[in-house]
Length: 567
Image (tube, rainbow, N blue to C red; front, side, top):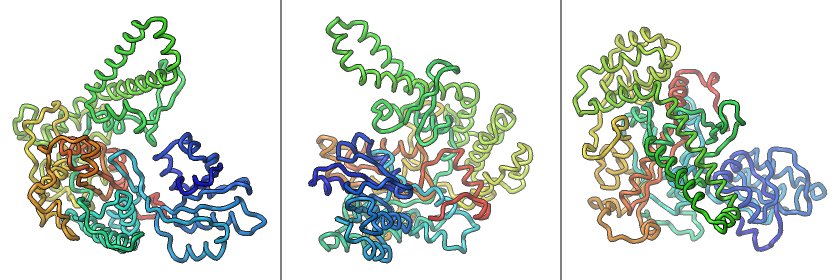
């Protein structure tokens, strides 16, 4: 976008809609925009001061509301808001909107492009489509006969195609075949979208399948990882603390101190370094860094101190980040010690069916009862434990479930348990348990023995061990993936990490209905081990256990009682 306009070296305005504002904020900061010659960022939906001597870049979604906003800015020659417009759409613009724009303000438009980027790059290996409503639209039984589900599927498919286009990939598309058909429907739509996109690329040539694989999965494939208490730093913080929009609020000088805010983002090197570590390792790591810094300052000479003063802003930033992460860790531990620690032991025993010594759990109800009888645990924690009991015992009887709900007095929240059937996991009947990879030789903390099913799927896909009946392709299988373990290259001669990534295959995983922070972590862990395959994971939105339970509860409500966006 910026390269197109740079030739004319002059200051410009950028006009965004709500969607592209969020997208741009994930990719760059105001200082980056200033470096590109952008002086002002405006919202297309709001009243703006006319600046007729300046050109404007419009980075907008191809929706009626945004296109109308653009047309209004150039409705007549005398009342033009800007000198000229450079228009960039996040996705392909429908013909009716394009023709409307052409007939209304074509003389003012210097450039018009569709750039195919209607997804949010959340982290270096994580993306979201930012459609949390998709959970309700795809899984609610109240919408089965309505077009809502079809329309949201089509939108998601278009967004996933723009992700593949941005990565310059034309992957082999496959999906998890049972128990629901959302993954299958979406996979077919994505494959069709990829065919259309690569038929109409700039060279008008059909692009062959690349060395990559896209796997689409329904959320019900691993219910355990969605409700378990996680003790790795990022997952634990987002579960236990009130972090909203990646913003953590804290006080530095005790409860009476001034409230500060910190954004947890990729720019923070310390956050990236420690976010996937176990909480015990994080506290040790941050404390060690603080003591090293103190020792360095004490040993400084006068000239060294002078140098430090010059670097003071950078030094202060580092110290602030250490304070932030120590605060987050201490906040997590203050919640963990009184209640969560005991919960974790119960959850791990139920999830795995064995205790920390490897002994089989004979009576799951005996393991569950202390949690249900403990008055310090809130309803959410009790419901999470009950769900783990149901998942671990492979379903329970309707009578047993009714008694549990009545005795624990959670009738008002009982849909958080019963509605899992809409995700293909009936609570009162036998569920099919999938075999797990043997991880008995891996070192783990006693309260973190569970491994997300997602990690098994990633490793099996890379090693070409996924059953083709259970995970069928809806397209031609890419050449890299049809040999035996062709992309598993642990023994590959060592090249630089970046060089390997350029020549590597990609595994892209998409989950319909949200991903957990532990599943995001798995993408980084697997990429680290299988150097020749980069794993990218994405979903409609990101999940915390509490948010998921609220979403599951709302599935049985009629549409007009659920807050969902229409556009």
